[in-house]
Image (cartoon, rainbow, N blue to C red):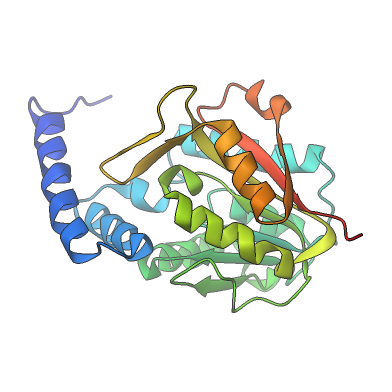
Length: 244
């Protein structure tokens, strides 16, 4: 395996810092636009991780893990699924291949990412499964049908999101979830001070996200069986609160 040239990591860190300063000045009040610009810049620099490089063993393993976990939690072929931040479908192609045609929806904030997703569909020869892919600029889900989804899934999305973005998703989830549906998301957990790194990586206490979900009319629970898988992020499941 080739090693990075001396100084490469340091130069990249300096470049990231300069980028953060410039983009925060431009997108001070719009984190999604900020992070879209981060992804575009990372891709332009040749970093395939901006779209979730499915050719790396670790990325393939993560995609398989997401699929297997939801299968163990009841995912069936006739379920309708929404993946927030679908990326280049490193996990999504497995869901698309498994679900009935037309039952997978994926949204992302980057047109570059969705171009990579369409290439994945061609490479896996699953275009006939009729997945629905949407470019979005927020998490209000205005493009999506009401009370339609059995499961909504977001892997490594809220780990890059400030609380207002997470709250926007929570407040709009009840409109698109079926009464029996649920939403699983991963996050970076901290037991100490909540913080972010260059406005790209966010760290939250579990109770902060559970309480936010409660205020948005959702029931939330920490998923200990996911933690047992020793993944680097943790997972919470939220459900619509029963009426009455």
